[in-house]
Image 1 (cartoon, rainbow, N blue to C red):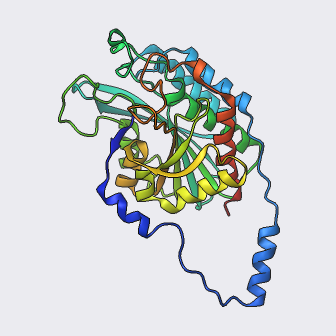
Image 2 (spheres, rainbow, N blue to C red; image 1 turned 30 degrees about the vertical axis):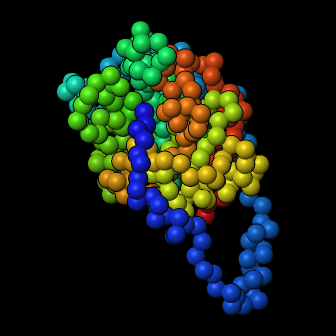
Image 3 (cartoon, rainbow, N blue to C red; image 1 turned 180 degrees about the horizontal axis):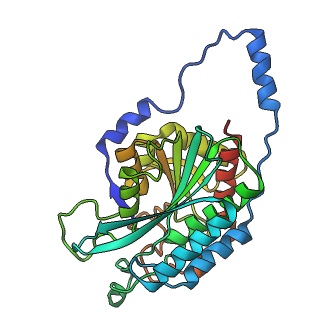
Length: 335
């Protein structure tokens, strides 16, 4: 998915980003405490890229995971069963949503919780459905064909499933919720002129209005979208910077600290409408989007976005490793 937003109001962020003034009058005791904290080594599990790749490939094997299809139903069961291997606290949130042509379809958001008793929480999310239209393909004959969505959908889910596996093996200090959204990519086709708004990200819209737990709150959220292609670059996307600049800087700083500066770039780029937009706007949990940006394409996304070529061949385990290890480090450094 992902519609660009040319936010005029994003410009004001530049004047308020990143740093607040610190107190330069620390006592020697406070300084010593700070030094000790910095010297403490935090255990971070090793993200297994081969495992993540396996989870991506398994999703793609079902075929295009278009809502209402047999492939979608089969993949939903696979995702639910896989998450139940890693957590006893798995919720399947069934919902109905009206798509761009007024058809009502059934959807499933699949949620796994870790350390559910801990109030201090963050959530990680991705969409698991795939687009029914290859409406950005170079061949117009493919416009009405569904896509595999290996990168646009399955890559983020694959990373989250491997993170879930690691969370079963190594318990973090905070609570984690992993949310897999359905019906993200059923937005209005490129060929249709429509005044309808909010036809994308239907699963996250529903969850934001009806969270899986009453009065659910989290400190922040991280959305993964298109995180598996070779030579990916992840810029500081504008919607994330508007709603959660401090979280975005935290994640980018972690990525650069552990050696992934060639992937996580500090350049700010245009805002987009993705699942995180509705989460920020509706439920008001600051949420960022780690999403592939390519300045050399018209869309600004990776070159096979919404084409029939978004298949398993585009997935690079090295990129899955970069994103997965970054997110794991963020999780285990939290207190």
